[in-house]
Amino acid sequence: MTDNYLLLGAKKRLIDELRQKGITDENVLNAFDKVERHRFVESFLWDRAYENTALKLVNGQTISHPYTVAFQSQLLKVQQGDKVLEIGTGSGFQAAILSEMGGRVFSVERQQQLYVKAKQLLEKLDDRIAVFYGDGFQGYPRFAPYSKIIVTCGAPEVPPALLEQLMIGGIMVIPVGDASHTMKRITKIDDDQYEEETFGDFLFVPMLKERVSVKH
Ligand code: SAH
Image (cartoon, rainbow, N blue to C red):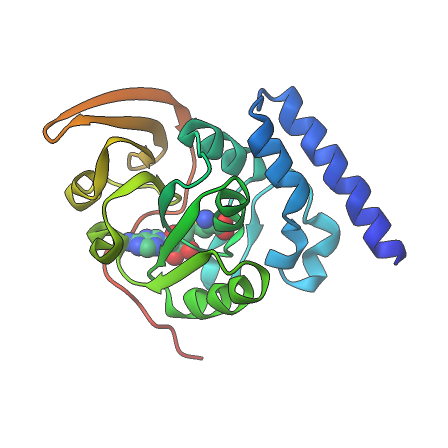
């Protein structure tokens, strides 16, 4: 019980910090209030779950920095009923935020171990999220087109399959680059016409090709 009170206080402080850093979309801030980030990390990390830092998952992967999750979610302008494709499920935290914002989320993860873990967790927490084991460079054609696409790993370039699977009028938020990643927001105006905006540099784990299964 005491633990829960401490975590609640830490969550409120994190939301204040996000506000101070320029997150103004109430839909994003409300989702950060509803989704419990500590459920997405190992229990020995619970006391750090609401710090504004990235944390380690299995296989050297990370749960993104809360500010980065909030920033990407704000750029994506998720609205009730949006069909959202996420590339890089990781812990499942970003997917849970997008779902809480009103999106119907389809999330793809290339690392089998992370996929299995996130799928189990999200099935318990939120039945509006579907998780798939796949290579995000291919998108997820089965449920295309999507009104929103978010990539949560650093892409070497914008994958053509993702542009194809975006609805006309749809928005994609994707960090692009090699050493550091420039946050881009791409709006699909027409089948071969896109508008691109950039929003500064971030550090992500790299987007890598093909699915992998790591055995212990
Ligand atoms: N959205 C996650 C962030 C995880 S870090 C969260 O909220 O926790 C980025 C994730 O992208 C890692 O889990 C990594 O395995 C995954 N990834 C990297 N390349 C990928 C690809 N080609 N397809 C799908 N996932 C990929």
